[in-house]
Length: 111
Picture (spheres, rainbow, N blue to C red):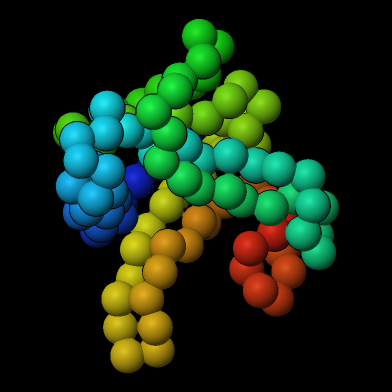
């Protein structure tokens, strides 16, 4: 399973709070991190908030934040770290994945 840095966990918590407020009390949301075929290098990362968790999903909690992945994605994300940076050159989430043998220039896909 992927690991969240403290900075990423804080940002995810902030985004979930906003999402719940906008939805008017949406049920408990989890951050789903998935790996899908595609992108310039073979696989691409996908992240979104999900209220449905399958019985075979892998799950890990970081305080009040729950991160879920399907079994195939969890295998490809084993040892990976999700971080959030906010600086002069831009802000956003980044995944550092030691399983990636090759990454593309955009940083959103790997093989």
